[in-house]
Length: 131
Image 1 (cartoon, rainbow, N blue to C red):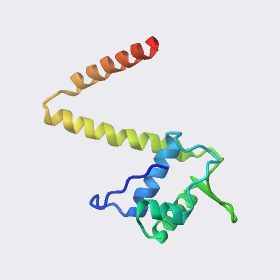
Image 2 (image 1 turned 180 degrees about the horizontal axis):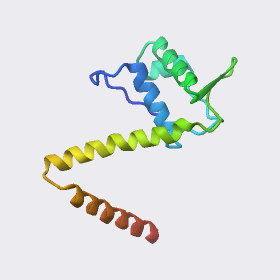
Image 3 (image 1 turned 180 degrees about the vertical axis):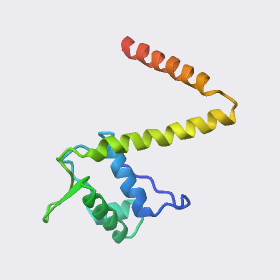
Image 4 (image 1 turned 135 degrees about the vertical axis):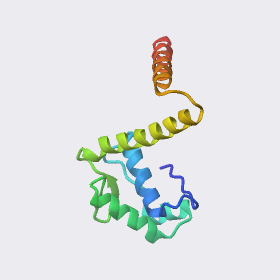
């Protein structure tokens, strides 16, 4: 599991873990039934207190993203989560907002940006067809 923490983001560490695990699940990088690292192992990898990871895992369990199995660890929930769609949309909204802000700073109109998106989409489809 690949998680990157930022000490300077202003977002609590446990929330960064929660958000990134949600993203990994929503994107399919963590699949239903897949085991998450034990709390101590992940804490050592991330260089954080095990209580921080435990809190993140509890939040994920409450949200239905993961489930604890007695003495067997923490696993990505097998039940389809409505969170997955919401998380995908949330991630895209963040990226769209950043793109719109950057386009605005570069004096690129929304219409030109949409045209560019269509061009890039056609190029990606064309490249995919060649493979």
